[in-house]
Length: 83
Image (cartoon, rainbow, N blue to C red; front, side, top):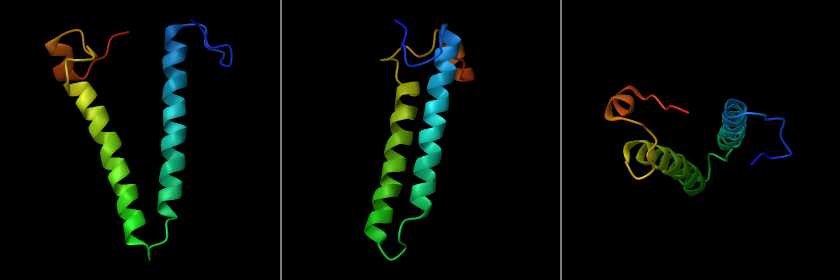
């Protein structure tokens, strides 16, 4: 199924588009996080915990065999995702 709101015509373009969206969102989060009031340590701790959460989810999804991200143990060891 193709998303009509994107110009993606094949799988690689869709993956590239998703990666671009991820990087834009991460950049925006990083920018806003850097502007948090230093006098509010609980808010900064929450932002730090949010980063830890997202990193943990990504690492768990890559490490877990539940999602079959990798085709083989060799690909898993080398971090190769085949499309």
